[in-house]
Length: 477
Image 1 (cartoon, one colour):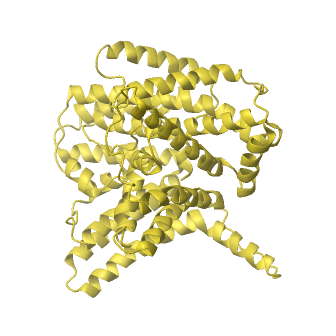
Image 2: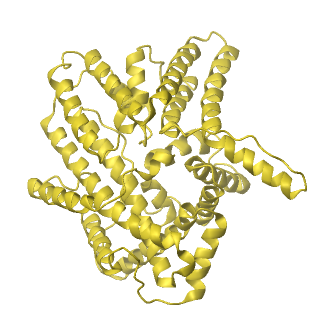
Image 3: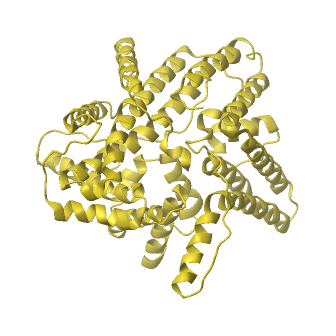
């Protein structure tokens, strides 16, 4: 069930009505309804993987209690590593087994040995990377005594499988969401209004921006050998806006939907394309994943407190693992490696914590430097996105090579698509709107909110009528 589908447009009001008017007596009844709704929502993808979600939920629920009850360090470690191993094991089998099997086969073939690997013919369970990380953070926090184990199975199940965040995040923490699900929620009209505004804006990002950019980005990347330099540059920019509009749009819809039920989720995006350096970009992009790797991988490895070698090692580990988290392909690993290379100079010069303030332009020399920094950061981000989008590393290298060598900067018409002029204007307009809203969480709220919502819905309907794209990019992760 897609957020941008008729099915969800029917599903959400029904759950909303039942939640506030039928199952509103107690916290338990509210949570039970959301669990049922969440399991139905997930089963719409493939009901068979619902058993995997339930098993994963029960595993972390049970091991969390056993860790807390453990009378010895040995017992606690046993249950801790059982949970970690099982969670990563499921993730490894479904998401990475074929990648490793094929990669080892290629390696041995290069050494002269003929190997025929056994590959698994299974589809990737939607959202497995997200709900696995929900459970991992919960168990890790219990083991290190940051939180207490949750003994109410319904409450814990809702934390893991809450449908707005189930299939594409944000990656929640037990310290943030569990306290909210453990108390009864009362209807808050202002919060619900903010939720509606955020849902509509998320749909604008997805349907109007991401899906429109996707048509052009796909055409350029699929036919890059015949495209000129200007078209290839536009293709990279279009993909940058596609993935931002798609994923941040999903996050906005998830956060807005959750507000309708009185629950606040972690913010996942904070206008990342206005970042002045790559460190700021990663504080603003996919915030829940970046902070997850920081807290559960980077800091336990020693962070940046050790010597020069430890700083370099930990930086590359966290970025490469982040890339690998996105998918079982060498392109994602290279994408992570490139971002580590971008980040390293800032870390070594102790400038990675610069630019923590809100951007304010006063149209002086310093403002020119800020604009130049933003454009530079966006440009190098687009270069990295080429590797993220390309099917192979070779394709990405040839794509970038053709940009440099072709040197033809005329407009190219793409078959069966509108002219590029229209999309360039749309992207520029969206950028201006984003810039004006950069201090807001819900851009459509505030003065004249009803007019803004009406215009946004009109745009969604107009663009959605001609769009062939439904699925969100991050469903594959």
